[in-house]
Amino acid sequence: MLPLFDSHAHLGRVTHYDEHYTQIPVVIPGVAAEDTRLLRAQFPCARFATGVHPLWIGKESCHFADVETLLGSGGFCAIGECGFDRRAAASWEIQKQYFSQQIALAITYDLPVIVHLVGGLEIFLRCHQAQPFRGVLHSCTLAQVPRSLIDAPDIYFGFSARLPQNSRANQLFMTLPLERVLLESDADETVPATLPILEAACQRLATLRSETAEHVANVTSRNAYQLFGDCSKTTRSSYP
Image (cartoon, one colour):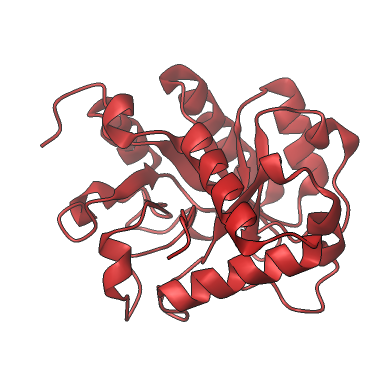
């Protein structure tokens, strides 16, 4: 089995996952300030994140204050996913406010940020310039990446198993330094979390880059460990 690290899977929402997801490292992001740590018993190798996704801003069950409370109790490896989405009901200004607040928390807790970006690139770049942070552009679909992001050593780019075969982003992932790429299934209620899906994504990335799947798996997994680390080391209190 390839040494794979799934850097983004919504395992609390999937309708199916295979046994490998109880054995491989995986990051479970939050979208509505939920406590993803409650999935620890099911997925003992997982790392956990929490945050407010732009599509959840303003929903009755989603409160930003919960993010601050959860982070204070420890056990999280990242904040997010959060960011910008042109389809969101919230205005760009409100989305910027939420994103900036979450960046501030990431800086306070020395955690990376899992960034969701569907439109709003210029706003995101201004936020990153004003408040530099480390993190990943989850499921990156940009055809081109501004030089400022490529030159930022702590920004990674997520290659998603869901990236369309004809996506312009394929050109990006052919040329990005592999040391800046993470592999992700982006599993949720529409896509199951299975090892074959993640392996296929790894092989596809390897083919794009004319490299071996083993090499891609090793490097992207090392990148994920560097960014997200060992969840136990990021815990600031004794969360059970």
